[in-house]
Image (cartoon, rainbow, N blue to C red; front, top):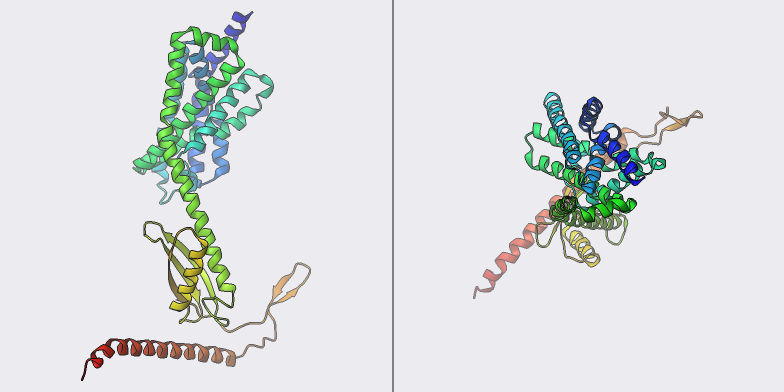
Length: 395
């Protein structure tokens, strides 16, 4: 009875490993869909390509072949995968050359930096793929497994980046593919050994099966080195993003306070851009502020805000503010709302006159005169500070 069931499973996995017309056609279709979706930066299209891709089948056959020690079946499965990968790389590289887009989107770049999280996903997905094969009532999970593990898109990214001669990022995409490949295989081996005790017994008795089993997990373990490095980098990047968001919220809070504000009570200020140079010590906060008063923020205000920021952070930061003066047009009355749809219409009797424009221009000129006077006063104080020691020495 056990031998009959094993033969039936062997025939089923042998069919999964075959390099036939169906496998080639589905591979070509999935590769073209994924490549075009990556170029269009469409996540939905890329997901569709994952469902079409047939690569999960030879991977399951590989796991079965490792456990029972069938070298021929393993070679057939790996050959199918190799041909599929070559087809995909060539097609995606050709489509990349034809389109020759000046810029690739986030769907491409997100697949160039794999980390430990990707390996964890692949391990679980591989286990679920084998579980769906062993339990027919769970076959509906295959589509979700194919989406989660994403074998074809990383290879398409490799081909696209090769067409751009971006070898470093192409290697990153290849690392993601290897992570998914070995992760699926390792997860599948564990699930199959757990669900089928006879396979586990066969693994113990066969030196060849045990050797292939150890090689598979050894290769997967080697991936831990680059993936851990990427994961640590990802954690550091997320920490820096969180710190940046906290600092920005702190600054925006100061802009709304009367006791500590960049622009004063009447002037308006708005954060346009905030970046942090982490390679400096202390790190520099580069802040671009849109202001209506060219004299604000002053050095005193910037120093006060920097002090408040450093109170709230584990490290000390230096705040560097670049102010951009914006000139607002004269105020206008709100547009009228008409009809049930809330359509806006222009007020036929506006109250804004040329006097408003004249007042605005005069106010701006007064601000400029005030800035000039402030600069002259600063120059005078600086001159007195430099000449005072010399005068003190005169008998």
